[in-house]
Image 1 (cartoon, rainbow, N blue to C red):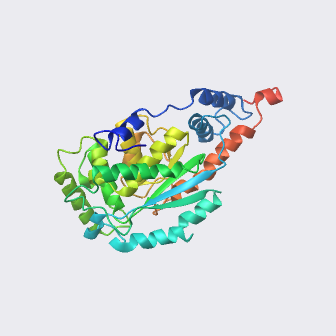
Image 2: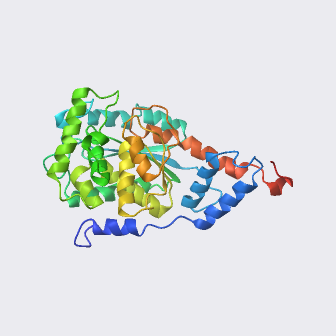
Image 3: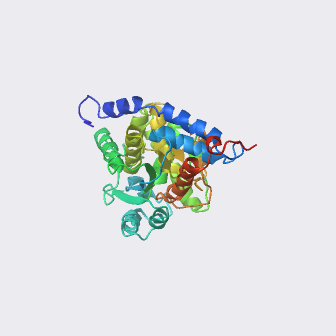
Length: 340
């Protein structure tokens, strides 16, 4: 993508999202018909049937398969972290990245257990974004380039992409973006949780409120919201989601920040993030509200407090099982009789 070919750095990105290819309706219909003929009671597999049909639509094939899944984790640092808005210190991001790169983080082991590859995308973790309470976190040009960078997540052509992120201060940026997209007070999108102290919570609410005040009048366009209030990891996630759509790759979203990235894509063009599915329900209290706005129902709720793609990776075996069962269960045509 040539991000400099038009007057605004965002024009090409916006056009790509608005022109996102639709899912394969023929593959979807074929998968649905097969589900109706499987030798199980009607709706006997519940959501597994829905997942198989969804996978067929967005992979463009029936039966769908999960053979080359990939977990992609994007890492960035945030200028707003200097205010103590997170449990970890502002300089913790590089250490978290090192754990991921050396195979010592939870996500590495969950991904390996799921038979998935894993890539960690670092984005200047030693250089935080600008302080979003005072100025845009990124310039338009930097944001557009970061979106393009995120598209590299599909370079290896996985057949299923699980997305995650990490970065101290990222939850504050994600809350600010959600608030700008959907309205409400800062305290609605930044709520008390058992992992953040009351003082840090107050600082996070104040930071989001101040950021919205600073950028008022410039928050009508989703990509303007992203470059002013978001982080590099959210921008890269947007790129990964868009690229996956163009390449026919279903996407599993992790928790709050990855869902915010999908919300940006959806805000630009409703339906452009329909190839994404919510993997895990975060303990971030505002995550259910965000999922409701996207009409998403998470696959798992296991109380995970970590981000970094762990919850999304844990969903890969569920989708593989749905696809394998869909392809392997006997049909009415195979047996000559139908179960009630």
